[in-house]
Length: 314
Image 1 (cartoon, rainbow, N blue to C red):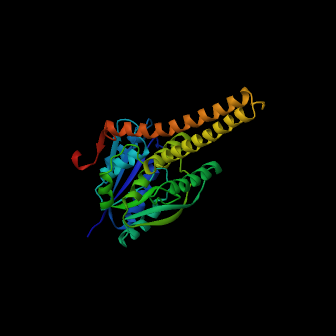
Image 2 (image 1 turned 90 degrees about the horizontal axis):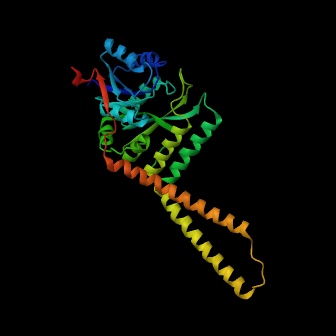
Image 3 (image 1 turned 30 degrees about the vertical axis):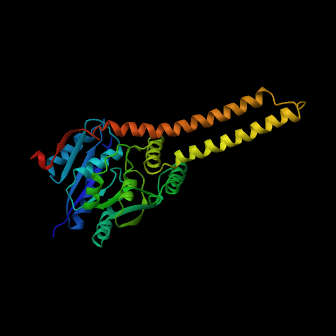
């Protein structure tokens, strides 16, 4: 039986890498012996990314394009690509070529042997700063300890999933998405393929610190309510500490009235400390409430402006 493999490639301002990404993907997929389609998702690029992909679509019907009306974000772009994929297996890979397309045949063989999810696990990250490597490693391990879902460490969105996994994921429509975590939450039989992550082929990273923090918050708040429990624990400890201190002050006042009490500086310091803790707890609760607000609006995850080479285009 002929196997159709879909390759989903989210793109945002990647005009410098479009041609090379297409060349390497087609070269790799031709060697697999599988039928294939490449689904490019243009996530509201402001450069010539969409125009270049359209040119490729003109000469290769195996290349599909989903062109968003605006930038909806990397995780949403991945979701849209999987929504419109037709293959028995779906590979998700970024367009910057840091994740090697040459690993796809290995993933397909693992899938054929019975695994439903085959994810790439980074054993090194070339061309990245010590700060980014350290914070990424710390986040993955922190998230693993914060949730009951077994989310593999040192993994990104580069992975192959079976059609039944993709269909199950389509039923999960939450807006603040952490796709790699959602796939782990779904279950199924999973395994890893290790690789060394390369430097960017060209262009600049589309995940600066601000977006990395947003992704980290999405991962934590999506799969763990322990921060809310932490707020309760800290509030309880502070209340107990305050009660003990009140007893101490009363004892001092009744039995040792001559004792000189601390001045305004110490009172102000204690007040600022407790106010800071209160605001921190309110901030944590606000993050969860904000995500509830996003969900109840029930807006579509994305809006597509144009498609190319999809069945409905014909």
